[in-house]
Length: 320
Image (cartoon, rainbow, N blue to C red; front, side, top):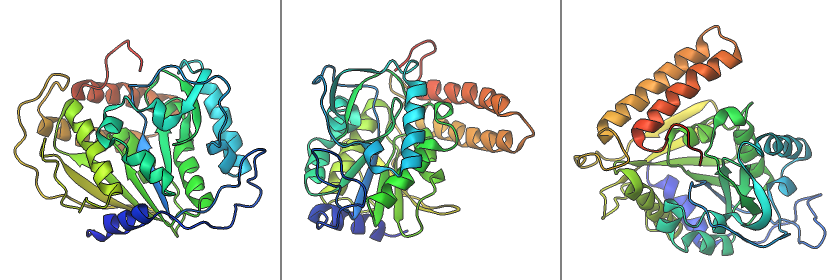
């Protein structure tokens, strides 16, 4: 892949999308119909969240946009995880504000809300809601993304349907871990949509997340070629074109030699990359083995938790 994948997105994100005909059947009392958009930015949720909000806040959400069958399935899935995710909707606020304390969103600054004002749609992969719009009012919760909580590719299906309903011509998904990236790779994207997945390459710990946010800001402002490098950490971008039936990856230039592991990460970055690659091979063998679904989940969940523990984003016995 060349710089074109980022350039096309950046050009559209800077200019915004011209108004289009309303989506049929999408009218919601007291709100305008949803216009079409050229671009859809997909981001991950964060552990850090803004507390509080406004009781009874209303606004358009993913359930208002998705086709009826997908909306009903996502609504049911949200209800199933509500208790385990400790969802509290006594006070609501737009999702981008709820996730604002997250390191990625700190790094991005105002770039995400500015892009939304220009007409870029933002969807967020959420451990408590599955998929939410950036402007969707959501409550507080304590849960990371656990794929087993959203079976049958629920989140990927919702994202693909959302892109279709928004008439997106291109999707840019900036993810921070392999768990989130798998959602993007396995989503049944419409064949007419150009989907680009961006992952951090190099960097460590909290600064890696902030650097990813700075990359998001530069992408949205049109200043991020495929060879983008964060000046503070040396982190670069790994870019994949996502196509129906698989992905084709174009590696970023080799990153500089990694520094020693920082607090939080329990091994050096290159070791963690090898462990993650081995885990993906293990996952493939588990999925191809003759096992019950419950057995597959058992084999995979604990192994993935160990990998996350090595990377510093999982602590036994703690949620959030």
